[in-house]
Amino acid sequence: MSSEVFLKIYKTKRVSELAKKHNSPEVLSRELQSRHIELIALGGAIGVGLFLGSATAIKSAGPAIIVNYIIAGVIIFLIMRALGELVMYKPVSGSFSTYAAEFIGDWAGFFTGWTYWFMWIVIGMAEITAIGKYVNLWFPKIDTWIPALISLVVIYLINMIAVKVFGEVEFWFAIIKVVTILVLILVGLLIIFTGFGNNGHATGFSNLWSHGGFFAQGLNGLLLSLQMVMFAFIGVELIGITAGEAKDPEKTIPKAIDSVIWRILIFYVGSLTVILAIYPWTQLQENVSPFVLTFEKVGIVGAAMIINMVVLTAALSSCNSGVFSSGRMLFNLSTLGQAPYGFQKVNHRSIPSKAITVSTLFLLIGVALNYFIPQKAFTYITSIGTVGAVWTWIIIMFAHLKYHQKVKEGKIKRSHFRMPGAPVTNWIVILFLIGVLILMAFDAGTRIALIVGPIWFIILTIGYQVVKRKKLAQ
Image (cartoon, rainbow, N blue to C red):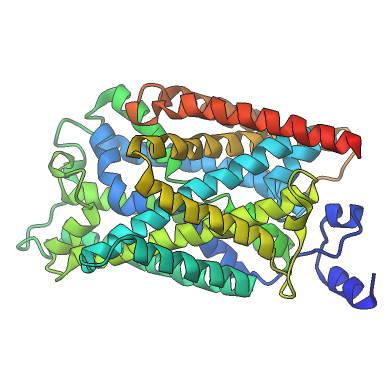
């Protein structure tokens, strides 16, 4: 190994122990700054669901949907604190897949890594196809596959240039979403307190309880909407994936985790509280964005077009995150010997180019599948993404439990960044997530995930046995 490679390795704050184990120079560069990581996680959790899908959740639970977002926010906070403690123990790009392999077993690392990879592939498939449809609203004569393909090529190039470029693009994508939400909250508060845009009649907050009560849809509505709310937070765990490329992770990761959770809660709870105070929840339509209604109320011309642009940005951001995270997960699986060796190769910019290229090709296949297979079949595939998110969160909490046990036994040193209430809070979160899976069985839209999910894990079981035998034969 040359002296230049050694310098490259030891310039990083902490090098992956797996890279050391394999005596491999294939390490990622640490160029993501604190502002990048904070906005990557924030942008990952604030997606199309808030701008377009929030009306559906409101219809299910009524104004009490706010309670669900608070509960979900607390659960996600605990998950992220557990992940943060593990990241401080070992900041690697594989994140929860690496921790699963170390603290639970090789099989857990294999299952988690491939499930998370596939989760982002199917999310990316859906988002890249949606991009074509959003652009089609402006340019109806253009075939939807053209903007979808152009977007995918641009996103691929962004991810191939440098990780700092990816971080910068995600930063500005997230800023657009954040500014839109802040403007909505500000405009909403003016309507609530001054009557601005409402003929001078201040609406106040009475709409939160005047139409059937705050818990208008009862306990059933509250419970059935809980899984919709939880899935709105998918993407916040991207902080863990960025750890292997974070500049000074000991400072940036804890700061990002603590700040992002509160911002997400403020944005979700704040925006929905304002919307529900302005409009009786019974008047909201599932196919119309509440954001469009609010901006139109104060006379903002082209409100629908503005929100369409924001939603397009959200879809691009989600697809960009999908290419980044799936590429890094393939890279990590390769270092664990659970994916082809070539995926751990990096180019001269320290980018896992082969892993990113393969992930992008799968996204391209997804675009084609969306046109050639029935919509129901595509729904079955994407439902694995739903199970993948819950599986990942449960694995994070269980890996942290095992980590905590080793800390108590004195086998490893505990991180300074800690999850509050462990191990009791671990079990609370795990039981809560299992409850979410059970609730999915009562919703026709998500029930299929409980059927398709086990099929995916059977495929993984076969795949793991093949990998295991191959390792034993070496």
